[in-house]
Every structure is written in structure tokens, then in C-alpha cells.
Image (cartoon, rainbow, N blue to C red; front, side):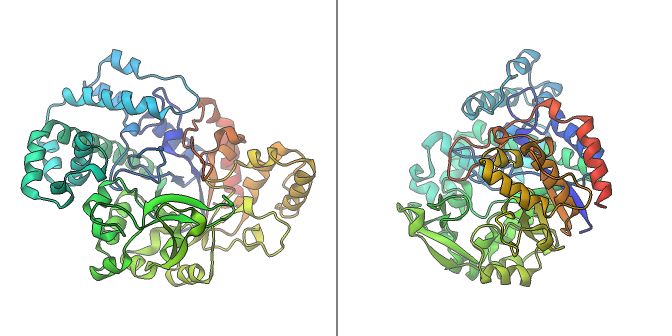
Length: 486
């Protein structure tokens, strides 16, 4: 990877008329913004359909596309929606209302499907069974509820009864295939637009999948579950920077011994699919590929224990040149050794750097070339938001530590508003071969635009305004990118 830079922008946070960012015009406009600001990478968050809680790290099927990202204006142009219906989908809101979207967006896309002429191309897509598991799972959820409520013939499964079920529920089964057909075409059209203009897409791969998901339903033996899909242990992390009580995620954990017995087939297929979808992939919670925190079901995150994973064997299944390790959190010699052996670049976060420790690994001087560096990730405060939360004495010390590492010629930090610009320029000056700037930091926004606060609810709702994407900001970033040869 050559020396380059990019912007972290969740698709859902893009501006637009329809209550949430989509693969539509706003996404193409953002690609143009990336080009104007001389960036090379668009980092997205996971694009799969979410479950209760709306986190992109808890999805109903790892292979799926979220229907919320559907470009409604394209459906209108195809004659699948009326002008009145399109107008009815407009929303003037500052934050995403997932509850409203859940009911209104699904109903709207169903209207579009009711007018869809099933072409040979679509029928070939359905018959390829690329999204068969997702479509069948979603159809079954509509009839039976959660995975635990599925009848035994679906849990086993019994192919003859499943074929009969699909026949009896053909309309819904085809509808869910339709959503994936439309979204896949829209995404890859957008990706080609970006790639043709020199922009790579950096995708995000959650380490785990949700319990109530097509992945668990289809691959029960790959997880530590009983025959009724009840977990003995679930995923999370011990107390750390983000939470003094640890984090209880609740995802089922992998049965690595079973996975090893069949050559990690599930992981191989998953990584192959992700590499087909994205140019680069950030593996979330990478440390879980060395050892993972297993929490007894029903207990708090503090009561977990570390257990061994098989990261080397899994990562050796694919070409690792396009992978990035999110190696934040509790990092020990095992994770460091795994990073070294695989050669994956790890992550550096400047907001973690200024605790007064001269050996802090996140200080700019300690950011190595084989790394991806951030001011902050989607889990952090925004830089301005972080500064705003400091009292007078804390900010004085923080500013002193920041000013001590600024590149030559960069204006010293005297006010909280100056923190984000100073850290961005410092970030671009580091040795890291890839730097990623959160869009909120680029615009100097506070925590009203924070993407996620771990261990809390009500996240993933931030949306940027059209005026944030100004020519002035693009030009400033363009100049800085040239200055630091990215």
C-alpha cells in the first residue's frame, strides 16, 4: 500500500432526503468530495441488515445488504415507485429514526416489488441461491418470529418441508431476494464509480455475528450452542478504556475445534465474500482471533475468561495484503505476535496518545509505517467533543501534550476548537501508510455527531448536513494531503 489517506463516513450518516444515507446521489456526491479533497479511501461501516438495536455489528445475515441503503430515486426511475410515494418518503430529521424506517421503508420497497417485472436476470439471480439462506431466514422470521421459535424441521433442517414452505411463502421469499438483487446492483455501481476515480472502499468486518441470524441458523455446529440455539457462553470484552465494567455483546462464540476439523470452511467463505465486496477490509476486534473473551451466558462481562482462537490458521486461508487489524483494547503478547506473523497493519489512535507517557504507543513518533492511523474511530468522541468534555486544567495539560508533538509550522492549540485541525495535520504527518480522518473531525463537529458510544443504546443515528461538504473544507484537505505526500 502506498502512502495515502481517506475519510471514515458511514453510509447511513450521509445527507439526503429520505431519513438515512443511501447508495444514491448523496453517496456519489461524497465520492466527488473525496476526489476534490485528494483522498484515496472511503472507509465504511458494515453494510449488512441490522437486528434489534440497529448496530451494524449485529446483523441478521453477514452476507446481506441493509434495505435502508436502497436508492429510492432509482426505484422511481425504474417505474417501481410513484412520485407521490417518493415524496412521502422524505424526512427532515437531524437523527435517524430506525423505528420509523423499520415500518415505512420495508412497506415502500414491498410496493416497488409488487410492480417489479421478474426478468430472466432476476430469476437467474434467485436460482443462483446467493441469498437463499438470507431470504429463507427472513421469510421464516416473518412467520415464526425469532430463530429460537423456528419449528424443528427448520432447525434440523428438512429440505422437503423447507421446499414446501418456500412454495407456500413464495412472495415473501422472492421479495427478500429482490431487496438483495437491487442493493447489490446499486452498491457495485457505486463502487465502480469510486474505483474509476481512484477511490478504494475500505469495508468493516465484525468478528462475530448475531445470535438471531441466518449465519447461526445455517451453521449451528460452528458455534457453542445447544440444539435449541441456546449459547453456553457469549462474546464481549473485559473492562477497558471504553467501559469500566467491560462490554457484554451477547454474540455467540465460535466452536473453533469444530471449525478446525473442516478447515475453517465458514471463515474461508466469509473472508472470500468480503474480499469480493471491498477493496480493503478492516477486521473488527482483531484481538479475538488470538484469544477471545468468553462470558458465561447470563453473567456480567467481568466474569468472562480468555480462550484460544485460531487466527493464524484462519488468516492464512486468504491473501492478507488487503486486510487491516483493529488491534485496539486489551492487547497482549499473543496479539502482537499474531500481527507480526501475519504482517497485517494495526491501528493507531491519536486521541489515546496524550496521557503524559513518553512511551505511549499512540504518540505520533511511535506510529510505524505498517499501520493505519486515526484521530479517532467511530467508537471515540469526536476530537472537538473530547476537548469540550475536559475541564480547564485537563485541557491545559492536554493542549500542552498536543503542542509538544505538532509538526513544524502547525499553529499551537490554544482553544478547544483548534484541537481537531491540529490533530488532523499531525495525523497526516505520521509515518503510517494509511491515515483515516473521521468526517466529524474534518468538519470540527462535537459529540452531537459521535457515531457510537460503546456499552450504551441510541447510537448509529448521526447524520451530516449538506453544508458540511463545502468546497472550502475539500480544498483545505487537498492542500494538506499534498503537503504530506499522501
